[in-house]
Amino acid sequence: MPLLDVSRLTTRFHTRNGTVHAVEDVSFSVEAGQTIGIVGESGSGKSVTCYSLIGLIPRPPGKIHSGRAIFDGSDLLQASEKQLRSIRGKRISMIFQDPMTSLNPYLKISSQLTEPLEIHEGIKGKAALHKAIDALAEVGIPEPETRIHAYPHEFSGGMRQRVMIAMALITRPELLICDEPTTALDVTVQKQVLDLIQERQRTLGTAVILITHDLAVVHQCCDQVNVMYAGRIVERAATQTLFSNPLHAYTRALMKSIPSTHAKGEALYTIPGTPPDLAHPPAGCAFRERNTLGEAKHCLTETPPELQEIHPGHFAQNCPGCLGRHVDQEQ
Image (cartoon, rainbow, N blue to C red):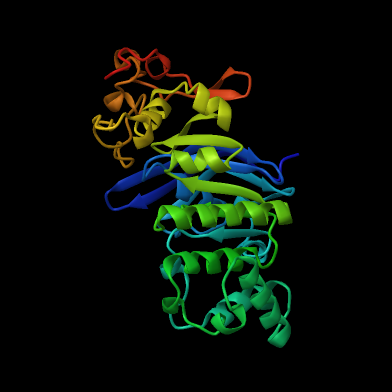
């Protein structure tokens, strides 16, 4: 039985400009110790999916319209705020995209690191401080006994992200959600942070959901990948399967956009156009207007495509135009 089983999650935002269909009919599961990637362009629904699971979407305007999210036998979507508070930060932790906006600039690191211990484990005073110092040492912060009394602005971006990782893991959660944890970091620090997350995962046996737009990070870290577009999962497969045989036109377009796949001096491929306005989603295939790597003329125009198992363990939306062969490999 999976640690987390999400089924047909639908989250919408009701605004003055209409209803935004942010997440529609999303399903996936995470096994203990497994790393699941959720990849896609900005606005594809990656973060909203995970925020919905732990009750972090603003209500209103946000509302979870349907779905289940079974975590260790309990439905997170039906849990009360009190129940979610007992799970968030203890059994499920999250590393946010920008540590400078996630860490309180007015509080020392010591106060922010010991808070989860005080709330969830009842550990206070010197005992909590010692655990916090150990947590900083484990994530590679030099001189943790001194640095723990510093403020967030006294750390570099990479060090602040390490503090966020220490804070997320200090209660030894069963599931860690990483929301673009390396976006604001340079390549060297990115690798250090990802290696750190993987090392702590191996040590603690934590399951990880990694939200990112970086396919190189996905290839390095994930066991399975969910590709999202316009609020829906368009393709799901084991990482090696997805990279060796991408089926959906959007997945192929993302992979063709990777700079390292181009010869030196060659013009970089970009996906034309922009994602659809989810306040007015298209009736059929959401990728039809941007589909240059399939056969757009065959895309569905009246009903949204559904995720189907095309090969054993390899799922993709059943849109004929997006599953059609690439008409011009050099386009």
